[in-house]
Image (cartoon, rainbow, N blue to C red; front, side, top):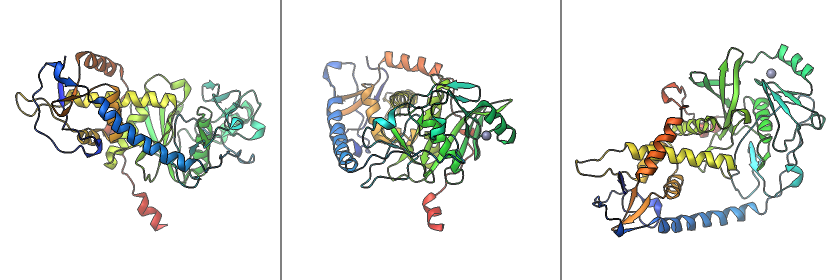
Length: 397
Ligand SMILES: [Zn+2]
């Protein structure tokens, strides 16, 4: 059954040109004349993705594997946890990523080398390799200051550090607060040690990245939960100050103790809220981790279904009309992610020469149930932030 039905403009084979509004076709409940146009769209999209993949592989191949060097032991600091990030394929290996995808598998960089970390109240068993200094490896536990993320080799050393460390929150500006949730914006150039330690910590939970220490081109958005002891890190994402490919997230991670509680989706929602403030659409860098991809797919589906549910018909007997471009504008989700989401949800059909979106009752009910469970939401009114024009700043320096 097709209720309610959403009508899309006639979709040419190249989905990118979806702008004009066609006359709305009348939708009957006669499903026999409906042809599934998903296949056509999928083929077009696949073709496009193949072209992209080909280009990427050409670019990536000459790369030599970049193996991260341990931070010099002297004034080293600790990193933190990341969930997913991606490399921008360029002709030469980019040296500026906070975490960059492996060009090739490198067994040495993938062997887990840290037994345990202690971060605030949490003891966490790492999942993957991270290039901590040699004297930190093979210890039963590494002790990390949960506010400045510096690491120490014993509880005593950390206690000594905590007497001197006055931080009770991440460095940088608090740009969002609602209830106990805050977001801090950290400039990878101004707070290099913190940013490097964050990347190092993140690497413990990401296996598809190589760590770099040039954090200058990135901003880090750290989400915290507040209590009487301070602002405790829950997760973060990094973002290039200037992205030529419309990436709005480089790496994203919810720390293991906070996973499966809706925080990952909150991080994603926040990243799109920033893009809305910038008046842009954005997409996460690829590859995403398995966990990252699941969270993104779920976020995209819920966000787009919500738009479809709430779109209103123009006339009395009309079906609601919305274009893919309008969905992009409302959500800041990049067009190819909108299209792939509509396909994954099986919502696109071809009817009398038009592509239409039809949502059945079951999908609506599932969606409503999922939204009821989604208690943690970003409130745009609580975001106090003005986007900076980093291209202008670069020229001034
Ligand atoms: Zn500290």
